[in-house]
Amino acid sequence: MSERARDEVQTYLRQGFGTAMELKAPYGLLIIDFVNGFADPAVFGGGNISEAIANTGPLLATARALGWPVAHSRIVFADDDGDHNIFTLKVPGMLTLKEDGAASQIVPSLAPVPGELVVRKTVPSAFFGTSLAPWLTQRGVQTLLVAGCVTSGCVRASVVDAMSWGFRPLVVSDCVGDRAIGPHEANLFDMQQKYAMVMPRDAALEAIGAATVATA
Image 1 (cartoon, rainbow, N blue to C red):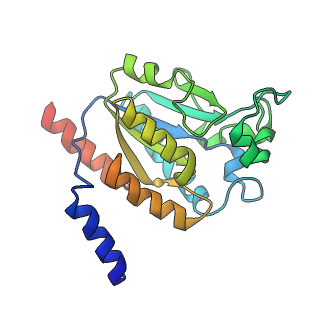
Image 2 (spheres, rainbow, N blue to C red):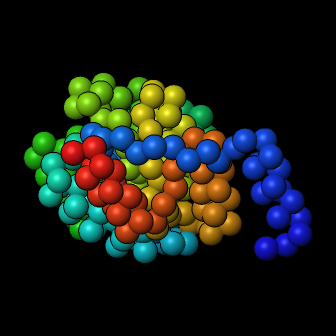
Image 3 (cartoon, rainbow, N blue to C red):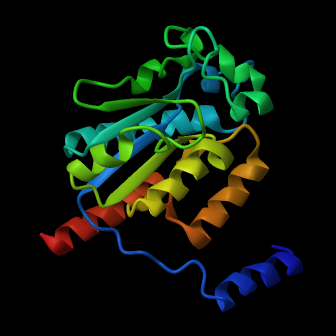
C-alpha cells in the first residue's frame, strides 16, 4: 500500500467510518443481475464476473438449505422500449434486455426455484420501484447477504437502498463482480466504510454460523 493510500485509510478511521456492524438473524440472500448477458464478456460481462457467479453457487445452496428467503433481480425492458429511461441514454445496449431474450435470463447454475422472488427492474437498484423491500420485510429479514453484478453499479445501488430501508447489508466480496477490477475494489472499500459489512463467502458463512449459535 502506498503512503498516500495509508493516509487515506487513516482519514476514514479517524473520522469514524467502517464501524463493524453486528449480523442479526433472520438472514436473506439477494442475487443481483447474474444473467447471461452479464456473464458474457462480449455483451456486458468481463472482469471477475464469471468467478463471482461460480462462487455464488455454494452460497445459494447454503441459503436454500438453511431456508433463507432468496431473491433475484433481472434488468428487463419492454419489447417496444416504451419504458426507456436515463439509464438507457447512458447505456443504450440495456434496451436489448427483454423478458424473453436469452441475454436477460438468469444463468442456469443460479436459476430460481419455486418460492424465490424474481424482480424485474429498469434502473440499477433492485429495490427501486419493485416489491423487494416489502417481500423481505414480510419474511423478517434483518441481515441481507448480497451477491451479483456489477459491484460499482447495480450492487452498490442496491446495497445503499437496502441500508436505507433498514436492512443490514452483507456484501459477499467474492460473490460480486465487475467488468473492471479497479471499480470493483474501490466500491467494496467504500461500501465497507459507509453502508455494509464486506466479507468473502466462507468468512461470512462462518460469522453467521457463530452468530446463530450465540443467539440460539
